[in-house]
Length: 219
Image 1: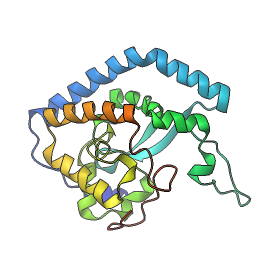
Image 2: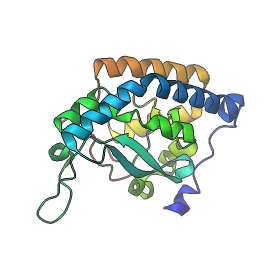
Image 3: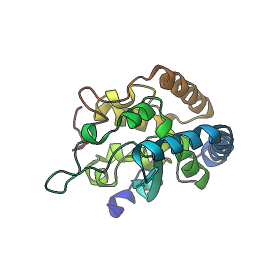
Image 4: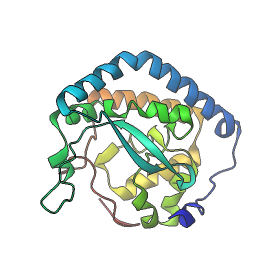
C-alpha cells in the first residue's frame, strides 16, 4: 500500500496557485469557517451527545497527499452495531435518524476544517476514501492523490455519491489536471447550492456509497 502510494503521478507542473495560493486559501477559509460555524458545531456536538452518546467525533485513517495516511475527523453519524459474528452491520442499519439529517445537510463534514488547518486536507479536492482502496486503483485513478484530499470536490458537485465509481474517479483526475483558483471558487459555490438542495447524498439503493471493489468497476 505504501509502495503504491509512492508511485502517485505528481500531476501538472506546480504554478503559483498550486504551490502557495491554494494553501493560503485553505487556511484563511478554514479558520474563518471555524470561527463563524463554532456555535453550529457546538450545537451539533450537543445533539450527538444527547441522542447517540459518546464519542461525538468519528476518527479514521484515510489516504491524503500521495496516499500518505492521516486521521480524518467528522461528526459521528452511525452506531457501532455488530452482527452475531461480531462484524459491523451495514451502513443502512447503523446510520441513525440524526446522522441521516446531518449527512443530508453535510454538517457531519464540518470538523474536517481542522484537518484543513493542519494541512492534511484542502477545502477543495478529491474526497479522502478508505485506506484499503489504495491497492484497488488503476494507475490513472491513483492520480487523484496527487493533490490534498478535499472537503468538497469536482466529483461532489457532479453527482456526489449518486454516480459510478468510474465517473467519480474520472472527475477527480480531471480536477487534478485543471486545478485553478477560479475552479476552486466555482466548486465551493456549487457545494453550498447542492447542500441546500440536498442532492446526491447516497448511491441509488444505498444508505451512503457502495464499496469500491476494483479499478474499472462501474457503479
